[in-house]
Amino acid sequence: MSKVERSKINIDEPLKEIIIGLLLGDGHIQSRQLNGNSRFMYGQSSLRENHLNYFNHIFELFKPFISKEYKIRSRSFLDKRTNKTYSSVLFATLTLPCFTFYRELFFNSQGKKIVPLNINQLLTPRGLAY
Image (cartoon, rainbow, N blue to C red):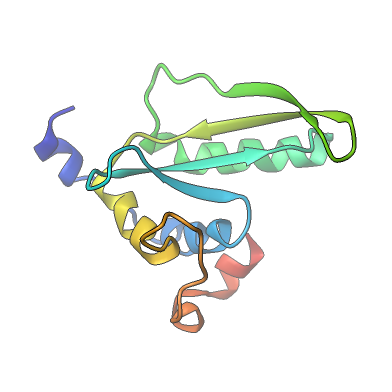
């Protein structure tokens, strides 16, 4: 996909509201380069059936922004605090300018996730539900 094609991809309602809610929880925006575009990432560590259904729902919402060849990744990891092994699933979107806006909102210059000062204007009932 060319740079021009990437720049034409927009996020429409209600996904804009949903992203705000997800970024207050398990959602993450990753920038691979200092001044580059960003991608949305979402993971779920509890794989009980209802949580997996929710993960699949979120995945379907973001499918238009995910490469056709992308496969959901799963991994296992050891929590050193509890000495328990957990499993998780995650996905990542394409790196697009439309996600960079959210990176600038939710991450400070050191890359630490923050709550935007204008969250009261950004958060809607739909976003809160997510």
